[in-house]
Length: 124
Image 1: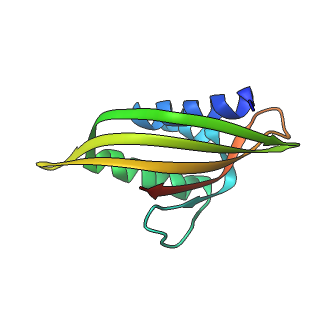
Image 2 (image 1 turned 180 degrees about the vertical axis):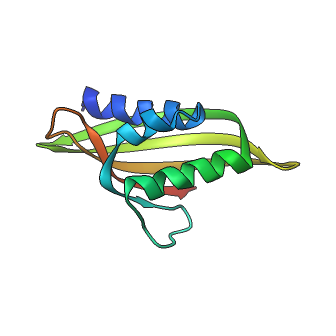
Image 3 (image 1 turned 45 degrees about the vertical axis):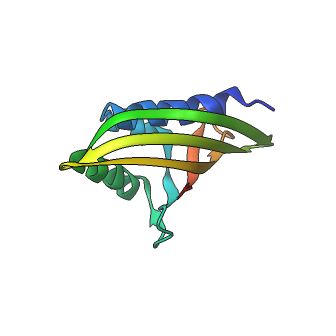
């Protein structure tokens, strides 16, 4: 299955946070979007709060490599679900980390621009 609009918005989101392009990243998310963090803590609600989490991570970490290992879209009328596996290598202070995980996005494509309305992430 394919949904080019949904795939493009997820790829734009990933490019934007890696480049600290906060304006483009904001455009990827619906104003009331929800992010479920990998630690399954409290949901982060709202585009501004979601942007803060990306900014905090990028201020603390030096990303050395981010790879999308697999990305599959499942379109349903105005909403598409995107299943994305990734690998992330980064450093915080003098410690190196490698995370492999799965992100699930819900993309609202009912308007003129597709927007992420839900993102959940789990580290595998």
